Image (tube, rainbow, N blue to C red):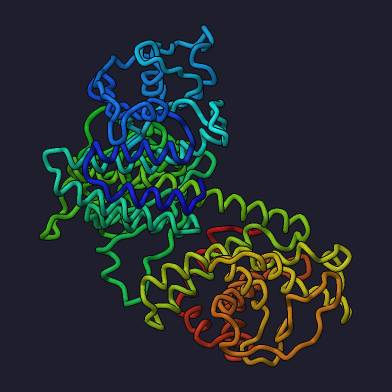
Amino acid sequence: MKKDELKKVKNSLSSIKDFDDLLNSLLTQTRKAIPSDAGSIYIVEEKKLTIRCAQNDTQQKDLEEGEELPFVSFSFPITKTSIAGYCVLSKEPLNIKDAYNIPKSEPYKFNVGTDVVTGYKTISSIALPLFVAGGRVLGVLQLINRLDKDGKVTTFSDDDLEIAQDLTLSISTALEMAEAAELSNAAYRGKHLQSIFEIDQKLNEIQDIDVLLERILTEARKIVNADAGSIYEVQGKNLAIKYAQNDTQSAKLQPGEKLPFLSFSFPITEKSISGYVALSGETLNIHDAYKLPEGVPYSFNPTSDKNTGYHTKSMLTIPLKIADSSLLGVLQIINAKNEEGEYIEFDADAELYINHFAANAANALGQAKSRRDLIDAMTEMANMRDPKETGMHVARVSKFSVEIYDRWAFNHKIDEAEREKFRDFLATASKCHDFGKIGIEDKILKKPGRFDDDERAIMNSHTCLGALLFKNFNSPLFQMCQNINLRHHEWWDGSRGYPGNLDWEKYEQGNPLPKAECLKGEEIPLEARIVSVADVFDALSHARVYKPAWTMEDAVNEIQKCSGTQFDPGVVEAFMQIKDRLIAISNSYGSD
């Protein structure tokens, strides 16, 4: 099933409130995505599995129009001897090629009872656990007898299983919302979980994983009205801080100013609260960080409180996992607040909502991580061609670009929705700014000396080559990638720069770049004007094979000196307002 079709399925399911109607719709939609003759959904009830809905097209054809299949409700113990029970206990999907010939080495067996009673013949089957918040298995989805394009029974493929697993992410979300609606506090919880589901849909639209992590922290704090929080990412055997937010501390800053940039990491051990959560995979709800229960292996580090004058009380720490259940990082939210703004404990509802939110974010995180891995692989490929373009250079340019844009957007009073979308695209697109160098031949790209005029013109053609990489992709993100590749060497005043006003789509690789009238001012896209500053600042402040690193002071002064000539004065103004933050970010990456 295509992504846009899956999105439509999720949207349609989210509007169904009745639990039984929802179950039937879930089963119908899944069978449409993976053509199958029959299917069932079982729900975990204490230590048993209870069938809640069943569908069978072959048997339905034998009925009169408008007549429904008889439904017999039954339950059975959750043990590994049944297919559905095995899925619950192992938390693993099953793909059964022949229900009547399951290897004897397997603990589960196919129950032939239904086939005997109805005269139906079960052949192939897949069964998947339905996960909800905190890794809890809510039930099992089972599809029976895969149909090929001719309507004949065949086996389920690995692709079918992957599609089904993707669908169960949306299925489990919808199921938990309906389940919550049946609880005693149904009205309030259902509304709150619905809002979380809507946030989840927005998260899936975010392209860059760093922007996504920051947004997850922001939204998690809003959901439970928390004053502060941090988000950490697994890097090898360490947890590294990605973002920290604190409303109390931010209220002390000037408008548009951000909290100081933080960069630190620590080993993943049980001694720290976040490390404990990373290792155990469990949510940890601490009522008072300074009064931990005796005998716990972890302790609270009060250093940050001492340095800032802040007081941490309640803490809710959650593992962040992606769709394949691997650990991406840890989310920690701090100091729940009541309506009067007083710090209180995170209650059971807060824990439910945040676990639900984190579980829903898994799909978005997995997709964003895959995109980052792809960009990193392409960057590494570019590095192999041009060692001057290091991965850390690309990462710094991306970070600088987003920070410069944030300040520029504040200065220009850009609407929040527009700002969030632009910065997301910019974070990813800026990493691609020199992809065109892949198309420059080695004798020029790796030449140690100065270029002659023709060689320089060929080298400058990397702007067109980079834009051509994204020519056939029709999306706002790839349009920005194209703009940045093509225009980040243009000059604001139009006195210099390239490639200028030429028909770049007709450029042929290997030829010198033709001379053309230079672009100037706002003819140059904003994203390219920002990346131009970020790229030059990083290039100046770091050593290259052809030059030593400039001091940060000299690099900053050069950017300021070129305001109005090479660089957009408005972008330089934003750069100068946050230069100390940019220097801190640069220092956090170390040397190339």
